[in-house]
Length: 239
Image 1 (cartoon, rainbow, N blue to C red):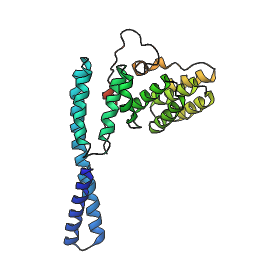
Image 2 (tube, rainbow, N blue to C red; image 1 turned 30 degrees about the horizontal axis):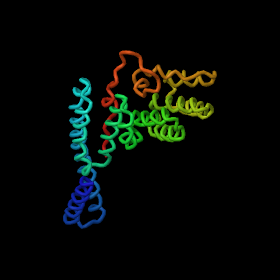
Image 3 (cartoon, helix red, strand yellow; image 1 turned 180 degrees about the vertical axis):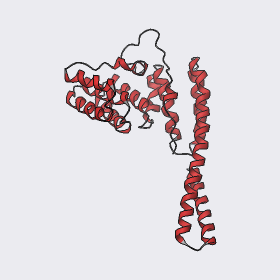
């Protein structure tokens, strides 16, 4: 990526200057590393701000139901993908989430396939898509990756157990929640889900409200919005 190449050039320049000031390879290496890190951080923040501005500009369109207009605005961020790592994946994640939330499942699929593993909502929707298709092997693989990437996200952990339980792997579901409960001992929803499985009952995902309803596994009640601050909860990650 261009940012990394520029960072290497800047680092090399500062390393050379350092060696000229004091002929020491150790000093040159330290100046190279420091310049590379500082330059990369500055550029990362710059591009992430640009992307965040694009995402924020889409909020009004989404709230007004202008989904396609919002998506086209987001795609403008692809121009930054040559400069920064993982930019396209972050944009695709958000587009996939928006399309899926609006029940445009087939359109959402290629974008969700490119989602980042730490984007728990994108991964959850991708798993939900395959769950609807009864491709349970893919569901388990996707949710295993999501649960590993977001070990302290309650929704991801309980959803993983829900899918395991619904596909007949009760023991694995209980084991997953036992592990999650150790990392989130004060989360009542994790604890309640674990108790439900131990008593041979179903996990009640409805406690997660709109997050659960937007997976469209069950029929949404009247009045539930298709878009519920999804972008706001998916933080942009620097690379």
